[in-house]
Image (cartoon, rainbow, N blue to C red):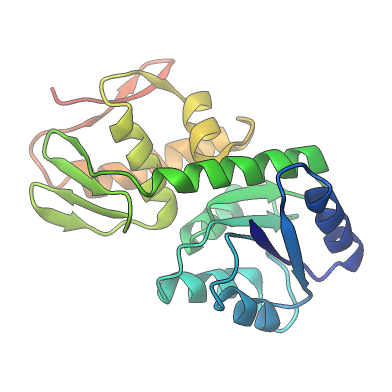
Length: 225
């Protein structure tokens, strides 16, 4: 697995490289110190995962990520940031980040996040997922309800795919955060509620039958009622 690290802090970048390459998973790490050069490397298609700092010289991480996603590049991206506000996390996820790790972090946690992203990316090679009148293409990350295509940003898509894969099961916020972002609950508890609200507006509101339901004091369930 080739991993690209786009990080302008040389000390952090070097430590990330050392941590990943001394892991027993066979990672090979390339470093890039700015957004412009990092984007060029990312567009080469040579990397199976990107670790991307949000605050970069020449081109910030959000712009790099948006450019990649607009070009159809679906490589898994772990975004690093010192920003901890809900609005900042949502901005990163909406731009197309697959996971979000806040600085300072433990390198053991970074490696765990990398492994989880690699495992998750393998799910994107499976067959269509269906429940009720919802259909999901996990290869191209497309969603339809009642034959109407619903355009979802990456974070919303990931949450919906998890809900549909676990239809008719009560999912606690901890379950959703762990499986969608591999993070401790913390501030992500609010992120879950934000994205459930986004999904309801797109997947439920335009249709007569509602599928996303709140389970009081527990979490949510995706179920046809």
